[in-house]
Image 1 (cartoon, rainbow over the protein chains, first blue to last red):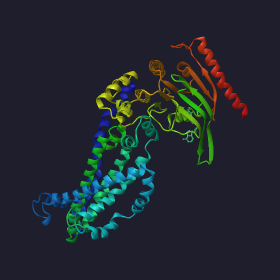
Image 2 (cartoon, each protein chain N blue to C red; image 1 turned 90 degrees about the vertical axis):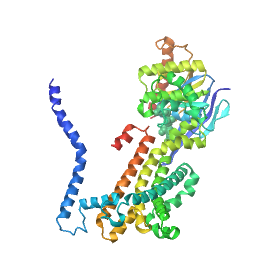
Image 3 (cartoon, rainbow over the protein chains, first blue to last red; image 1 turned 120 degrees about the horizontal axis):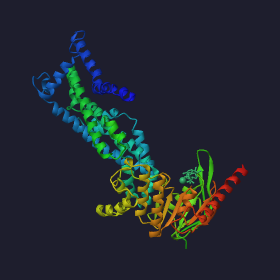
Image 4 (cartoon, chains in turn blue, yellow; image 1 turned 45 degrees about the horizontal axis):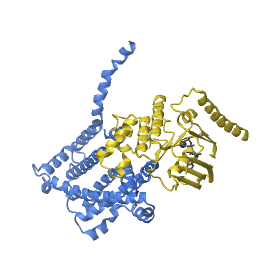
Length: 283
Length: 258
Ligand SMILES: Nc1ncnc2c1ncn2[C@@H]1O[C@H](COP(=O)(O)OP(=O)(O)OP(=O)(O)O)[C@@H](O)[C@H]1O
Ligand SMILES: [Mg+2]
């Protein structure tokens, strides 16, 4: 009896904390934005150097919807710019995923590929993708291609490394079980090793999609004349820091969305994993 | 010709990290006749799993010959079904897909695969769980999937490595009876590793007692008590006394040696 009366008053308090849990993650960003807005309006810095959040939002709004042309030539062109960047990300990422998984599985599975292919790739890996920009421009000119090449370089190695790791760490006993049931070499790869390595491969893909966005933007600052990175760099020349910030926000948002998409695909593909590992993280 | 012939099997694991060799199996000679139900009995670490792995083709003996149906064992194959000490199921496949995996590898159509696998789902009492993944089932249920998977291949030799260790007493009894029934119906050759004397005596018609590492064969006891076996009968207890004496002798010999 005592235990019942002891427990029941705790429950509404518990619900209250539950309700706050959703909000508490908003507290820090809200305070930051409010502080920033107050600081920008106080006039300690010229508004051109530190635009207020409201001004950034205004610029972003006009960039997207083109209602009053505050963003001048960019007004209403956000979708075009975002699409240009997204296509480069997608192109480079798709290419990197395909080749990264193929090379990674080959290296992880076969001694021959490990000996012949891996040393070269591991030597190329520490070279920052950005340092390829001069060569990329000479080889591909100023257009989509150097950007896709750069994205590819940034996304390839995470996929490669994780695919190698995934294949190398496949439970030895699963391979034995497969052999016991009569799997031939090809079936061993497609029906046992590849599915077993998928969690690791997906981890690589998620790192890669982040690199892909970083490198698209970098490439667009230097080697391409369109996309979000180009807008960012171009507005910097015109001292339009509100647009610079709007571009940064757009990139962050799109990168976040790509990761969410990938995570959704992963949750569907790896539904067989312990629910705590996939869905527990998804929250 | 025996179904399984082990000739002078020696297995040495070279421990590179510690820079020494570990003699695990020391000159094993054993003939297992077709339709024998052999129980391999021995203390932990004496090389029971290693011997099973050599018959399965997972490991090569350092020296000696392993013949199954007169043919030298070179690699694993579906003529020898293995039930592993751990369930070792494909975690991305459901119970029924795990059981039917052998058929999938052979290119059998899905409908027929499922049809044949359902028979084994029923056999191991997992109806209702056929579409569960290994992570959604208990250890004992997974072990039963592993057993069904080996049986479905209809192998001439079944190698089982302490398959019932993870089961509760009740399920273990049921599975032991079921296994004996399957063996009587199919007339396949079973090599069953255990370290329970009672289990060996309930199941086997030949009980092979191994020594502590390095594993040698202490004695192979034929035990033809009719089934179902009465574990309280004098014959059962005589055999049990004999085997326990072998094991005890072994441990006193070891105690004197040290
Ligand atoms: N791959 C390996 N490399 C090195 N040593 C090994 C390897 N596999 C087994 N051993 C050694 O061989 C010995 C026998 O191992 P094994 O697994 O065959 O024992 P077991 O009789 O099955 O024991 P248990 O009843 O505990 O399962 C052990 O001492 C073990 O350390
Ligand atoms: Mg063992």
